[in-house]
Length: 332
Image (cartoon, one colour):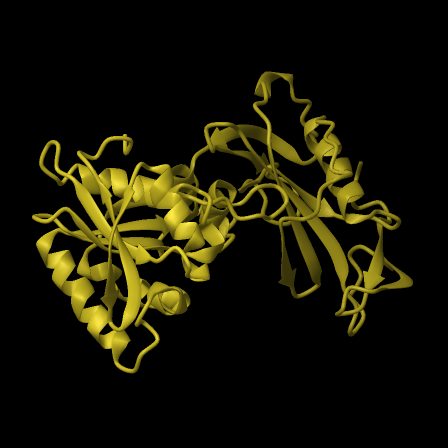
């Protein structure tokens, strides 16, 4: 398709409401009116982006490397229809976006640019390139793309490096993919630890008292310095913490973010704790008493791992019960 033969666009308001007005490409855009553009970012399973080189005689960024597919929606196109059409015209590639939404939309001076992100392991030799627009295609990883932009051979999308990170962090429906890790806390984690503690403070006896957060902060620093502080994190956000005394094999604090429970984060942190203990060393913890409704989940968790109920006691004026686990069995 030759885009310069009286191509017509639908016009939209700034709120992306179609006006039922048409606009001819190449003419000045009316005041307060916008048109729709689309891009399709095709990644392979190696997290490489398919990039295309524009023909040197093409108007607009000639001879530059570009994202996989891009163009303007013509009159009557929906966003997905425009993206499917452009993929077929430029690459001879049939894609089905009927169940997809744009992953993100970038505003530009003349309109809205919808970006779709899909994964396809393509044989580039089988693509049918549109000779009027596309000079060539190849796969490129994040470092290559950034380098090409620095060299001035790729269109300078300011966010292109982020596309690789987004693709690795979100699924095609825009849901964030949790990247959970565990490790030993350092002082660099402290702010996130305190933010986490404020979320779950009312689940922990005594934490709601005045000044308790400052004492907690001091305790965290102390445990970090002793090598007795473990985290579970989603990216850089702390979503679980375990503080323990090595010599006594005692769990002093164990909590998981409410939105991350039932993902076995507590078990993962306990396994890491076990690597710090002597072989055969037992583990103790103080938790809620059986009649305390707050403690149902905690008691069930410890029991499932083989902890046995022990003596009753008080912690900061709150009734608790000790649980014991002998020789660390069942924590593997």
